Length: 303
Image (tube, rainbow, N blue to C red; front, side, top):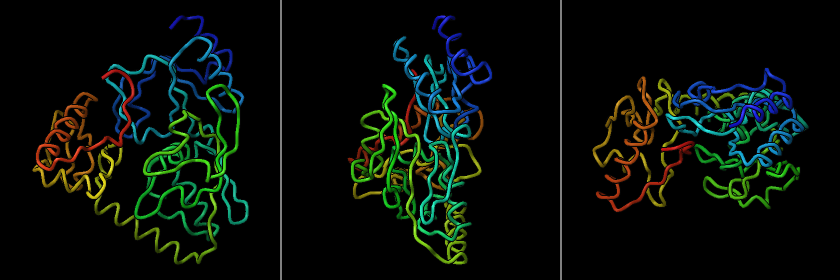
């Protein structure tokens, strides 16, 4: 990327909001990833639009980053522009029985706001380590709940910089997918619609789910959450365990012994370690059970 283009980003956002060759292992829950050529941290929708338009004008690849919780970045990094929308765009506002939150708001922060206001229905999402933007895009879910169940509307920005507000009925939300993902829209904010509940019951449900996560998931290790999508009629973790792959390792990457649906970074794992491990798991499960596992983790960069 030409130096004058990098200078243009600094002029648009300010030098303090533009990082060059930023290590992506600082920005993913896997703690893995080489450098991003340009790393942007816009603080307004206008800055976001200007950055997108510059990327389009210069034909630069870009990627919108939230908390980096469902992502594996190549060891070679990303030769393009990473646009981070987390703490810079993380406002959470209560409006009666609804919560309006910006795309960078952590799901845990939204769950805490709901709990404080005695609003129920969002407990399932409180332990998902991601931002609202990513959760809406992929219709994140856990413990029987999905984002589509509580979502009212979403405000998005197209890749051309146009802002639209879409009701949930137009989002085509399914298992880990939505029109937002298919069309490449960028989530700006969303309205979550909840119901009044009893604070003690909400607290009890929150504690119960937190205990389940702690008991069943390898939270003590860096990971990207569930590594594979749930195949129809099966559970990915059970297929992997029944294939004899519990604890299987490649370098610093390991199939968790606590929950085989998670690939963990036991220390110093590379993206190539994870990719090789995932490929081996996929091939083994296919051979033994005839089921093709699809990654839930997104890959960024060259592999």
